[in-house]
Length: 100
Image (tube, rainbow, N blue to C red; front, side, top):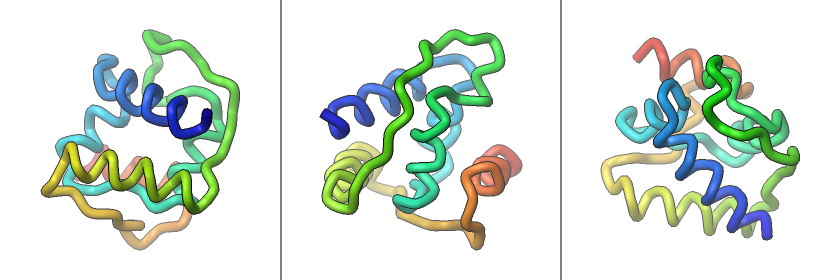
C-alpha cells in the first residue's frame, strides 16, 4: 500500500505547478530514505502554496519499500542519483534543490 501511495504522490506532485518533485525531476537528484520520509510524513507539499494537490495521510517507507520507490524513480530518471546533498533534513534538502 505504501509503495503505491508513494508512487502516486510523487507522480502527481511532479505534475502540479510548483510541486517540488517537478523540480526534483530535473535536478538529477533523489532524496535518501530518511529525507523522503520527512516529506511523506508531512502529508502535503509546502511548495504547493496554491493547494493544487490533495493532502495525504502521513506515512513513511521502510527500507525495502524505499528501495522499490528509488529504483522506480531512477528507472524513469536515469541521470538522477540518490544524494543527501550534505544535509539531513527535508527542509534543507528541498531548499538546495530549489536554489540549484
